[in-house]
Image 1 (tube, one colour):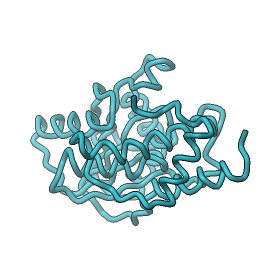
Image 2 (cartoon, rainbow, N blue to C red):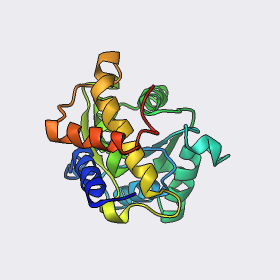
Image 3 (cartoon, one colour):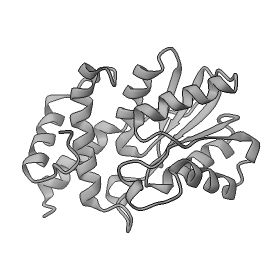
Image 4 (spheres, helix red, strand yellow):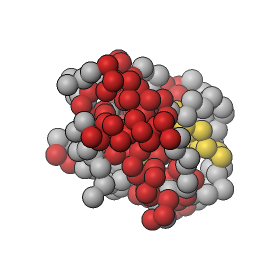
Length: 215
């Protein structure tokens, strides 16, 4: 199933989705919830390294987690952050959102209610969702300075017992499709997709990696 060609096409998509931003001091760390708890661990590490004074964890139960968890993504992320040493007073929880757009919108509403207005953000996400998260944030909350980061894990090392290689590739193809079609729907800012990357996407979809495509 995973020929050398498939792995090469998948690596191209992985590399495209990664933005490779360099961490800089910011007002706020925003961790976007998901089924991957390594994101929570990395967000806590970024806080503990002193890059920002507050950590917002965002996520209710999304398409994946609502079938496997009863605890919300944000509450689970917050618990991990506490266990790693992030102080309670630095953690802010938004646990109602079900998609990336709601992550941004509901976090904005949460901070407004608390009369907080951070200008610079470190957005923490899975490696293969960096670019789409960046494009969504820029559309939904313009005017803020944004750095995106993710757990520093190579593509070949990323799949584990909870997240299979098949799921990773399916999500990457689905997210690339969304990067192309979502700007016209008003969900994201435009991101250029090189022809070589779109070709790799088409080959992966033809090979059956179409389970995460938008209908």
